[in-house]
Length: 307
Length: 229
Image (cartoon, rainbow over all chains, first blue to last red; front, side):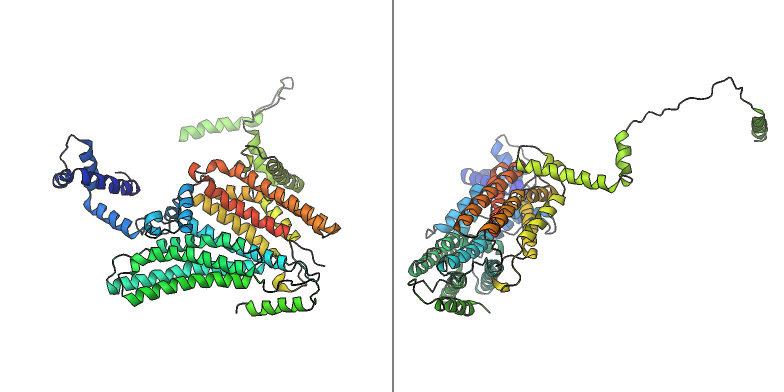
């Protein structure tokens, strides 16, 4: 008997095709599993439907997206989360940057193969890009000040890592938990698995990487415009994906859920901008008193240091 | 039984009377053919002088350094992996990157522990990543390759420190930028030359990108190093 992994994909495609082409043949093979018919297609059906319980279990596993057949203490269990090719990862990133209304990110791009590669490495890249760009922007804004001594500010990496990883794991946990609870109480039809939610959030953070690099340009209005654009794109990916799952709920609950999701996303962007990019004091004129600039710098540090 | 004893008694009884005539040559050589000379050598490394032991390991490490600086398609790094080289490079890099401890702690550069943790945890995470994606390289082989390929960046750090001894202006910054960029490209190229063969073909970019990020972060730490005044 082939491994369950081989049978999973095969049975969906072949069963669907063959059922649409030849509905009569499948019923025959169910009642007489040992009948050997001449055509190869029914032979395939026989293979697929010979173990009914296994097929049903595998179908429900596919619908739920949970990998429960392998124990979580084996290496293969975690290897199943990295079952993506380069092309697939690039395709998912592209889908997160170009939200098309009606194209559900999870159904269209992830398709029951959620991976942890994308979310993890996008979060790591975001941590370093935000920390490095913040450091660079502080340096660029203070370049004219002779009293300014460049500091690498390495502690920012730790803080950025904390913020990004907490967001990328706790918020999907909260959203998934909330939606699963509503699903059980309000009779919703579909809910996404935890891994798919993590995958969605991870890929939706990708737009912030080029945004954080573009924040180096020292114009305040441009930075806020960039935040707006990034939030709109990334938020709409989230909204388009979550809306079909939430719209069966009561109107207020659906609306509140959407607003909370978008709000949290916006908070992350604004928090990153305010903490890492302290660019309020632009050197207006070279003759400005030197005492004012360091004072403002330290005042900003005190204000925007999160407690 | 009694017969054996009787037989034995006369056998041993007459031994004391045996005398060898002086004109029969009894001298000679007994040579036992030594089949595995090497096995005897390895077994007896306990008795060799300490200098030999240390020099042998140092020579192995030095040979791997040469392989990294001229990355050909050799499998020496993978076959005889060791972690002495990476440890040596990591400690020297962390020592050289030691930020100024006297100033405000919040704004200083990475401390020794931070550099150490970044290098080792970064290597472990990249190795795990490549194994999870289906790579056939073993855990310690990958750690060995990633650690040894930090060598160009360590050399760049040395050069940067020497340049900073002279001046700290924009000319020195440009020199440091060029040196660090060149050594970062060298490191990434060398490690992909060693690691690329063990990856599945349609996931090579997925494995190379974290290596690129890793060396980029280390290069960034080297470039932004500013000595205490």
